Image (cartoon, rainbow, N blue to C red):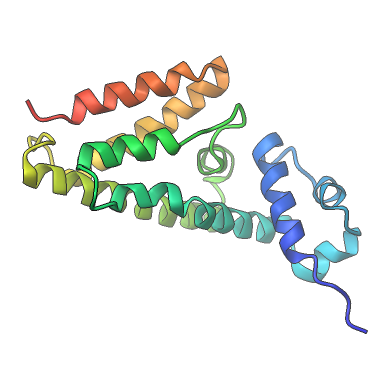
Length: 186
């Protein structure tokens, strides 16, 4: 009789544990305990914690697709799309896993490359939305759409980190309002 696969359970537990405690503070034992599976199950699916970490990052990014889809919603104005995306960015005290991994794992080549791909995809969604706003005159056009997109993503991650320090959701509301004013064409 084949053994049941616990891969998805381990990935979801890794996501929860890495998100709450950080990558370096999370051990394989903590992850399998959280998943309720034997430690051997981990090594049936993953060669290392790094391999799981990369899979967790990919899973987190795929699970956040609905939130990023707001940036591509043709029924909304570009500024409303950006606001909807930022409003859906409901981070907890644990922050954003992308930002957390960036601060902890950016010096590791495999993680650096995976994070570059995540940021490039995210920035591209913002860039397209901002370009639409520049075309219809609702978003400032004194800077390239890509430069504005990179600024928004970078500032958003900084705002999320600040929210972790202050444990105050108002920080993200202030960020949304500031970005809307910053992007709006005058």
